[in-house]
Amino acid sequence: MSGPKLNRVVADFTCEATGDKTVRLKDLRGQNVVLYFYPKDSTPGCTLEGQDFRDSHAKFRRQKTVILGVSRDSLASHEKFKAKQKFPFELLSDPSEKLCKKFDVIHQKTLYGRKFLGVERSTFLIDQDGKLRQEWRKVKVKGHAAEVLDAVKGLDK
Image (cartoon, rainbow, N blue to C red; front, side, top):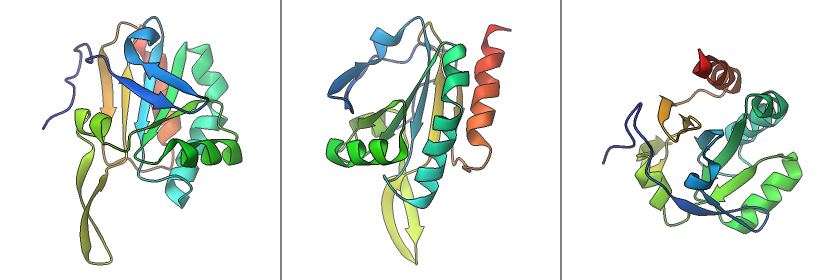
């Protein structure tokens, strides 16, 4: 399965989110959307990635950009993670992997010699018209939020 195509409108989706919300992509038109997929709540890399987006949140807002984190964790897990880390953005719960599969982020991984299917850390930048403008796959956390912010700033140029 392949994910959305660059410079094409991303098909609408609806997903349950923290804050007792349901997020629908189409409702976010007029704003840029950073959709970042991560493997698991409260793990070191995922926590650091979320903190980096949290710490840059005001800069993203000034660029009319919404940040949404996505993992397969439950809403209850997301609520705890969001509260503990004081994330000012919503986390989307995708236990059925429907959204993960739509963006083609479920891949075979290996940990301690054991193979399993897991979320490949990936980020997608969707512009205010709903078009996928950039994607990052196999993301390395360090410096990633800053790189995404630079890409957002470059959208209007």
